[in-house]
Length: 440
Image 1 (spheres, rainbow, N blue to C red):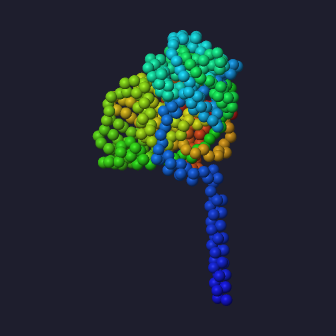
Image 2: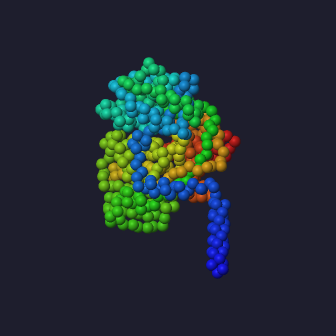
Image 3: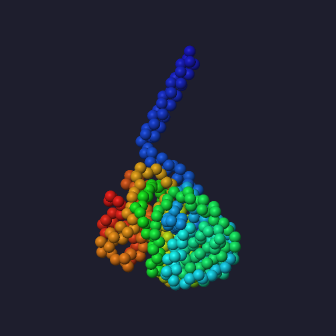
């Protein structure tokens, strides 16, 4: 009998424990906001990414825009489910290229016809690169000596009779022809016909630039992402090594020094770090060397950047700005550094970057946003006192804002960004007017 009582007591005790565990689990599930349920997965991703975050050169220096002229309209296109840029570059890496020749030089009228070519695909790069560097990206050794031809726009027709691709230089309105001995664009056409984003545009040729004007009102989604914050010691070991590191604290700022030539300054309030390397005072001798040095530094920082690519170049002042891209559009923060800003100066190299990077998309309860067209944006700027000659660039992108309820989440809101005086601002910041239809 005593044995039965003991067994019954054990069973009753186990039942009570099971019920208690059930209540605790139920409470945790009910009190956990479903919006953040994906967060535990990022811990694994972070552990994996902290080991090796190698960015490929062809991805870092890939086109920022794909423009398709279907014979009727020009459209900026993007595919959410398939990386069109990567597929195009992969296809082109199998082509066999021939010689480069000049079609037209410093001719604005011919350049207008070139950028508006019907039945064509254009790849727009935010940097001027040489044909030899392009060959390096596409792994085409036979182009290694073609370093005198500079361009930022690649165009090819979907006419089977024209086997060439054409290279355009927006700054001097020059067009080159690069012969193709073998290659097919059939797979690329299939991808273009299944794009998720297709925005009607006009390409307007201006002095030293070609502007993308959005013809219709633009409907874009709002996204939310989990962000990861890297600790200072990760950057210290990557950039300064692990031996003889001295640390000095002053308010929100920590300064780490390896020697008199290298130091890392971390601002915890701004979540921004600045790396100074004065060990080499020789400037990059060419644009190619500058791009390669920027690429090496990005990988030395070893930050788990998501879809990062070069977004802006200032060759004169030797500045490279890299941004993270979402759905084919650049992300902007309150600061002007982007994801990483690299400056090559007489005294050495300076790299500024954020220790917060976007990682995992999460469900967003926000509705799509309808933005004005480019003509309306320009009219608002004129009414606010800005003349056309003061506007350096207008670009669509996503504004990065920390979520009010969770600092580990950023909301990416679509917006126009206007560059004036080499600084990017929203329309609201410049003239106090919303760029959305119906206001904010």
